[in-house]
Image 1: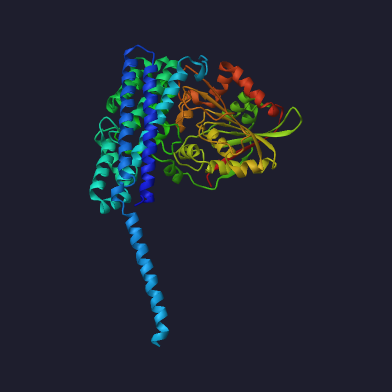
Image 2: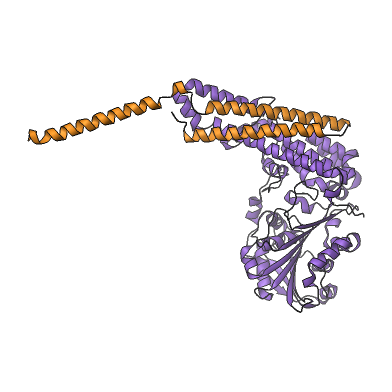
Length: 109
Length: 454
């Protein structure tokens, strides 16, 4: 079964957010590495940036996992093809019945 | 008084600004991720999945909850929608800042650090303790330090000292305090967007606009001889700013016709700032007008000013607008009004000590010049300080300087700005006069108006 459009929109947004936060995490880590100051406040800032880079990375991973679960259902759960075959069969049977009924109507009169 | 190099040329500042912008963007990304995860958690899509496949829906909901609450992830990422907003407010009350808030606060602290390169006093003594207290979410201590500074140095000096980072400190405080209503404007300041509320209490501009109503009316005055004697007879930016000082803060504006060097008649609209009196009075230059002129384009001040211009300026005539404080914001509002720039050729706007940074002229050819003393708080009231890491649009001319007398509100006065132009930054004055060369010539006529809300 195809994912509902709303569900697909949520999934896409979460995947985009995961990618963005992953990129930000790398940038923040690079920023922390590039800080050249040696004072206590610089050390504090470096540690803070590294922690925020790490948390951004974890948030990106969480978002990716949530997006995977929210996305299309696994194949073994899909009922689409069976449902389509069933509907097609029902339509064909109805068409045959109508045709047979029309042909038999003049003879009945 | 001393002059200082522009913020971009101070060594080390640009790197800190770039880092601050990165943190602002990362904060916005983290907040957006929280909003989207909250929306997914509260969505009908998840409910439909629960009906179809309860086990899968439970796993998805748990994954989303973990995303929003993991201690070493978003931590408290709820935002948006009714439930998300409630959860966000609960986080504020329980003092659980999320990753987005912490990124924004780090970015704001880097702005203060960048400003301290240019203003070393921000990183010393009690001012440093003030920022440390805000950073550690010790609001009561921050207020105590601020009060002690006011007692020791006077509130004028203290306000002027923090003026270069006034908006940033307010946003920093708003993001770490327990008041949820001031967070919206704080987020806008932290991420370089347009705030729609003041960041102290979070009162929206729309609220102030409710009290600032009226079609605007302009009444022509017979200027008293004392005023006429003080007005300049030739055009220059310092002279126009002095003219505004001479008009006083009593609800008056002035239109002067000048004959340019090429013999063409041009017009200079000079707009004064907020007047005294009750916060809401019959003049559009009152306190409520101050708020609405910063956050809105169509206001009683601009409506009344348009009527004044229509009374003495021929359609299609070249027009330069010089405005001080609230008058500068109103000047930009006029330039941002398509109908006004269709009627008149607004070539220049000179905003003196005005919060105009998020306003844009309707005609891209209009040249915008913003003059800012970095110790003046008023230009930062729109949320962007003179040492902001976010640049103004290309083509804008922003001239900033340091008047180290640290005397607010004196350093905000039009007369003081004129003196600064003449004695502190004469090169900048000459540059502006060159830009406005077409308006430099003898004054042919002067029209003074008093403006009313209705």
